[in-house]
Length: 140
Image (tube, rainbow, N blue to C red; front, side, top):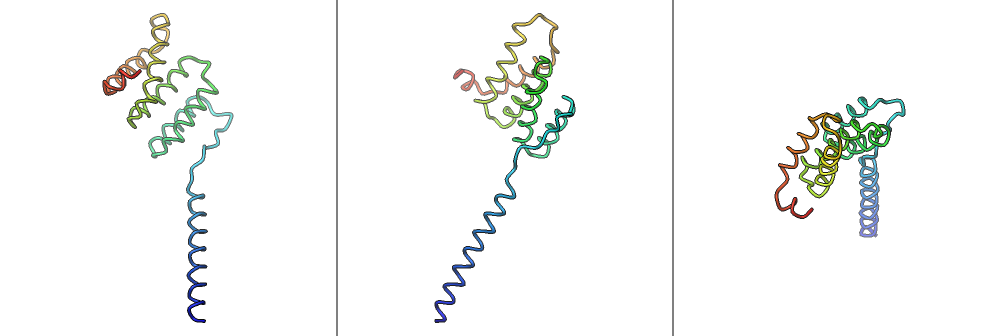
């Protein structure tokens, strides 16, 4: 009888531990933040930078994607958002994700009249492409 009580207690303790760990896991999952519709492009960029600086890479990427979706019709804003996305990937050494975005930006500059877009983004794209190991550039 005593052995049966111990087994039941152990069983219920295990079930309780699993339930609590499941609840904790669910509570700790990060979801995409609410981005108020009235935020300006600058405010979204600031939120993205704050998220990235706080170690929330996925949230930062979500903010930049939101920036592009809302304000991407402005090519300069589009370039800025895309560059920041690519730069996050470069810092994380996610070359397969960074390279296509960097090349897209470079192609935008190549197909436009000189001076159409801020030159600093082209320079930063070139700097980031220089960080990519050669073997990844050859795959493209």
